Length: 129
Image (tube, rainbow, N blue to C red):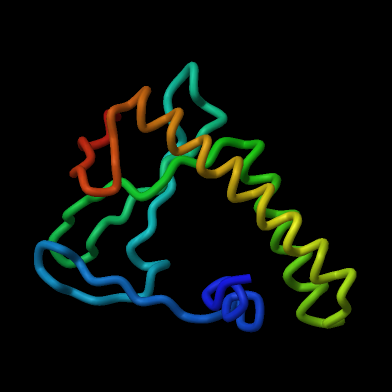
């Protein structure tokens, strides 16, 4: 297990701060994050967008289909279980769920970045209302 995953598992409530690439404002990640449901036929997919509260600069972060969100919820439960018990069996379960989630997440990014032509480095379009 790499150091980053181990540190997250030890402290899943760690506070992450993000800086805007335009105006350099810094806030907790949660302040920047907006999740937007995609239009049909992709309505079961949520797009994560980082929006600066100061200047409004928007940047694509991720796509989260329903099945990947479900795997994420299972992973969160296994993190909590292992954090409480520290048993080898619970750690193995956490590690298995982490790999499963990561595989699904990575596949979703490849699929939807290809469909929508986005990447983390590209500015996103304004949402259509």
